Image 1 (cartoon, helix red, strand yellow):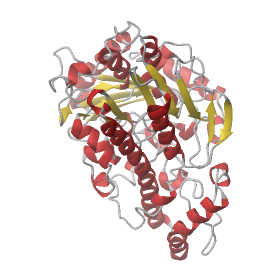
Image 2: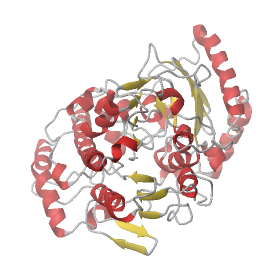
Image 3: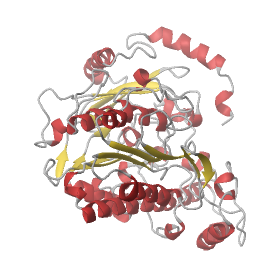
Length: 510
């Protein structure tokens, strides 16, 4: 599992961006097995998504609704359930649910501290914590292969979670990849200069590439020609922890590109477009090491013959904006962050080249692994086993047709308002609540980039009424009573005023 890896940046999904920056090893999994074309999250945020992956429950059920909370490590999770049935279990990389996974049932673990750092990260182990020299993506892969080769009991089945920090902000590629896409012109999304008409919550966010990205921290821009001094660097530790050799190698590879933009003295639209290209080349170069990591693991499985009897899954904790609507980050229920890449191979059980159209969500991972391991699926789990949709490539008649989503973290980073919603194969209905109390409705067949909120369109009212009914059903099915009820317009406004007063000023200070 990686962090913030957009499906648009996985070449198996066929986007224009990914054709220019392919992911051949992640694509191998899709070729060897299945690609899920309609894979969604339940809450597009790192911590909540990880807790959902582990428990098979929506945020309001496992209790981890927003980052900064503490996950209860004693809670049931599928790796512990496998461990109790004789599996060797391990976790390496990003945890981000608590200080450490102590007590969460893993036989072995080494995790990044909190969000993790790209260079010379703090690593927490059962023995304590310390700084380890190296690049996070490579370290996580090294730890994983060491455990597979030397530390586990080879006579037992195993479950390993290889969880990368990359390509999470601030998008620091490995030095070997730093120049990989410099000079590549990536296609600019048609709605990069979105004005957010008719979408008040979209207008109120603070995740715009050309306005909200930090020029030093995120975009690695320098103060002036000839200088390696970074512009505004919000969290200087990301660079300060590099060794002098690493920093010199980093600066040398970006110097010419930085000098060129400083010489050009760009402003306005031109600078906004340059920032998009710099974001893309740094983000996609950061993905390169993740793809290499996947290749190393697949090669090891093939070399040892274990690929024949091992389920391999690649996914991300959510999707990410690559300039659509002018954005980076996630959180919203719009397509780019609602969707997440998901590919899975299991020779002899999943036919190569399987393309799954059925809508799936991250509540489905836990029951899938229990099912394949021959364990009963607990009644606390709110998803269903993906084995049902990969077997013949077709979903059973009673498979879900619609997916439910709920995002909570406001006030918070990027100022995205709390909202919930439903997505069918064609339509999407969202309810924002709090200080911005608004409904949004999209017909994805005619408006795939979600630019036209048709909530007030007279010709759409029958469909909207039907979707509101569907939302009532889904909220009851998943036992979600958080936020205002679907048919409750007033209390949301009152609650929004109360919330806004309670949080006055808070969201301006991130």
